[in-house]
Image (cartoon, rainbow, N blue to C red; front, side, top):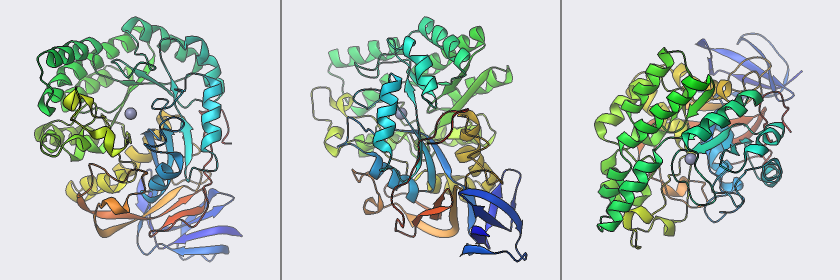
Length: 456
Ligand SMILES: [Zn+2]
């Protein structure tokens, strides 16, 4: 007898959408078969013609625990994730005190999240100047990937220069590890920000000018050169502009091992939102023009950009203050979005661009699973995979309201956005973790380790 049977849904499988039933046993998808077949199951769910998508794997979140727990924590961040159809998050090693530079710190962070997280979680390790020797232990401890900055990320999280990046990529190649990069050029940013502040220029437009497309392009093309010279692989985080995506398209055509992510903010919002409405819309790289926003979509549609992740990077409202000495430069640069990625991207892709739901499943689940070594366990509705899935009502209209957000700090640049197609129920390893406004189970998210290591 099966534990769970899902009937009357439209299953979004890797190579097509089928009206079939899905059976779950022991937390995994046990079988998919024609709906008329008579089967025994402990529980049956009528999906009422909803689309059933693989649970979203958000490969870029900052849940800020330990260290910045007044900004976000695993409890609130993961509730928001569950409500938004996310079943696995891969959390970044910074905005943590201490940053996750070693195996011991990774294990401590994992222990903190267990019992608090509603969704499964993998942890990124740090890739900074001083932790080269820690990388083998981080790999052994199951770090899902390694985050590196090509510009200043704050004093305790050092950036790497190109020589150091080449060296670390060789180390990670031996370990089978993947590095993900924040691509903005250190020197260009530093020089232009210092000049602005010297001249008393600290308005939002000045921030946009400093965080230029040119600086993002320079960092990406430098990184592509390193990948070409080392034969290693690299993942480019939060691509904000079509010109940057074009560099990645060329690198892919050349056969280099580059993958790339963009975020809903670059596909749904624009620089004028930031200029008019303020620091809640501040992120790094910053929002770009309306023309760029529209063009960036094409690079998601054509497969140049592999994944769409939230870069959920919250803070307190006080940290969005622009009245300090550094003006707009002083406000925190990050947006909250883990809860609204699926609905925002679904509306853009399926409703506005009439793309197939297959694309949604590909960039939100299948590709992140493959890139981060979770394929075979997560990322698709296939027998043997974890029964992580979300029911999405394609007819449901929505408007994002602050009071609906599960974040610790209930504000977001996406508040006010409207669309159609809403996740209504989320299942993690066969257990319902969210349904129509309620959370029926206690947090039971597990620590997902990189390929070759089990879930614990
Ligand atoms: Zn980030």
